[in-house]
Amino acid sequence: MKRGFAMKRIKLLALAACLLCPALGLATPRHPARPASNLHSLNRQIRQQVVQIHKDLRSGRLTRAQARTRLEALKNIRRQELEFFQANGSKEITNDQNDQLQQQLRNANNSN
Image 1 (cartoon, rainbow, N blue to C red):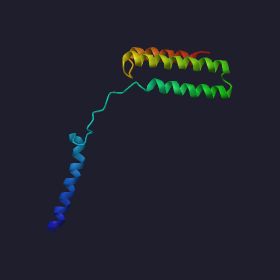
Image 2 (tube, rainbow, N blue to C red):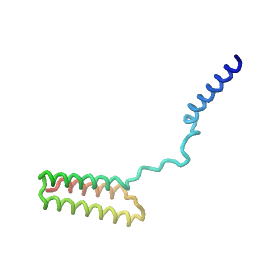
Image 3 (tube, rainbow, N blue to C red):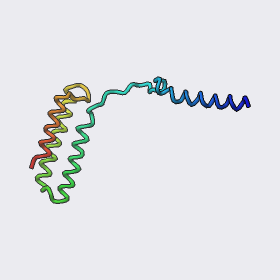
Image 4 (cartoon, one colour):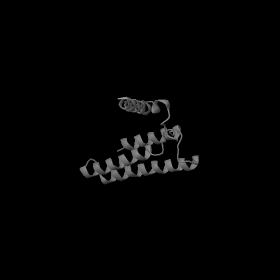
């Protein structure tokens, strides 16, 4: 009878430890989370627009000339982003640079 009680107590303590460790910060990752990077956000949007341009071209919503113009505008935006990376010495762009590229992206999307 004492043995059963001791086993229940051990199980209860183990359960309590499992539940409390995360709350106490004992089970946190060794490496702190880095701040969100803007490295891929613009590139992802550009890729999405490229896919949409190809869909619109296939469906007839865009002519070849319109698609070519929009794709060239997206290439220029990507080149500008790469130049910002090089100028900053890292694969990060400033908020002002990001705003500028986002505006160019909106303009390219609304053109034609």
